[in-house]
Each structure stands twice: as structure tokens, then as C-alpha cells.
Image 1 (tube, rainbow, N blue to C red):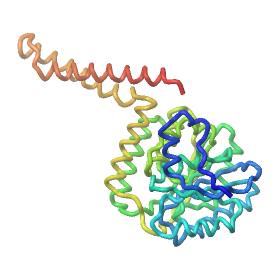
Image 2: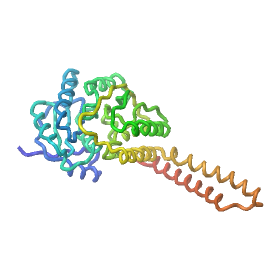
Image 3: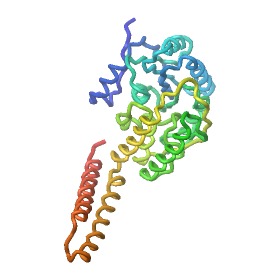
Image 4: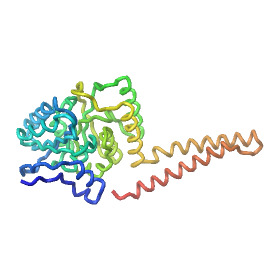
Length: 330
């Protein structure tokens, strides 16, 4: 039987970058048996998880089978260099709701989640990891929370402890970035970058193209929902020690993390970032101008003019960016 390529959602048919990425990254796979449309799609990115990916799949399948929800588990191998893909192919014959997608090249967890969500058949999409850190047996609880609260569009598992590597660097850095994101978004965010979450696929579609390829994709989907007045709730969850080796790079990924927070707020609310700086510069320039008038007999110094003009330029850019955001058709 001929293999079928990974499909791209109709919403992105006009987006060349997305369709090219899907074609380049997704390997051919055997067509799965046609079944009734599932209610839940669980997207599980996998990269070098050979020692525990089967245990994770068993845990997720057992919880979902007991829940009564119809579901599909989409395991995406991100061009692993170990036997992860072989383990997934082996599991595909044992778990009827498992669908395996293999990337031809490494695209990052964000790319895997984006393509997996576009290709999802369920109304509710769940993101999680395959490294045994998240309590995936609680996935039905997240789905049920969305069912019981129609006004909530996303529910996030908020971790109550930090078990990652480089804790001395990660904990204060993540706290600072989270507080910065709370100020920019105007919302309380107990956990900005939790990898366990459930959301309504239809609501997420306009924002999937914004997802970066790396770890900050979870931050992006959180800020996208919050910035557009979609309700995001949080449920406390435990967080276990990671199985295997962490793919997190403290400096590189933290830098990308900060940039992504700024990028997202600039995309949805540029005035929040630029206008305070503009007003401060104009205000300081005005005060310094008054001081110059008194000290130098109505002569303004070059520094004063630079402060004032820079503030005006940043303010003009802020207004222009806000105009672009408000005129953007989405």
C-alpha cells in the first residue's frame, strides 16, 4: 500500500513556509486505519528517548483508555540519533490509537508541536513530553477541566517544584522572566513554560504559525492566548526528575526565551513595551531642558536634544507598530 505524507491543515495552505516545513520534515508513513474522529489529540515530541518512550506511551494510553475519551496519540520522532524511532514503530503495532510521524531532519520540539497540532484530528489538543517528568496520567483531568469550563480555552499544568538541571541559574532566571511576562501580559502566570497543557485546537490555529522551533513554543502559546483575551487556567501538578539527558542549553535557550517573550508582546501589544521607554526619555529630556535653560541661559545641550528626540522617535514607532497590529487581519 502506498505511503501517505503528513497532511497540512487547510488553514495553512496559503502559508509557504509552513507547508514547506511539513514536507521537508515529515517522513512517509503507512496510512493508519480510518476510525471515527477522536475527541482528544495528544502530541508527543520524541528526541533520543529510547530508554523510556515505551513506558511513557503505556502510561498515557492506560490513562486515556480508562477515561472513556476517544483519542489519538501522535508521537513525533524529531530525527533521533538513537533507537527511538524503532521503539515507536514497535509500539505502533501494539497501541491502536498511536500514530507515529518521523521527521527527515531535526526541527525542534516547537516544530513538532506545531505540525502535530495542525495535523490533529481532535477538538482538544494536549501537549506533553516523553521524558517522564510530567504526570501524564492526569491528561484526562486536563481534558475534563475544559469540558466542565466552556469559557476556558487552555489549561496548563503548573509545576509545584523545579527538578531541571542548572537549578541555581534556572530558578532565578525563570522567576524574573515570568514576572516580566506577567507585567507585559497583565495576567498572573504561575508557570510560563510548562510542557503539559490542553487547549481547544480551533482557538489555537491563528497562533500556531508564531511558534518558534525550540523550547519557548510553550511560552508562545501561553502568551498568544493571554494577549488575545482567551482564558487560561492552571492546575498544580508534580514534576519528576527527567529520564535521560536534558536538551536544554542554559545560555542559548534562556536568551531565546527572553527574546520570544518580547517578540510575543510586541506582536500583540507593542505599546506595552515601547511607550514607557518613550515617555521616560521625553520626561527626562524635558526636565534636563528646564535645567539647561536655567544653568546655560536658555541654551539646550546636545544630550538634552538627543534624549528628547530619541523619546519622540520611539513613541512614533510605538504608535506605528500599534496601528499595524490593530489593522492586521487575523
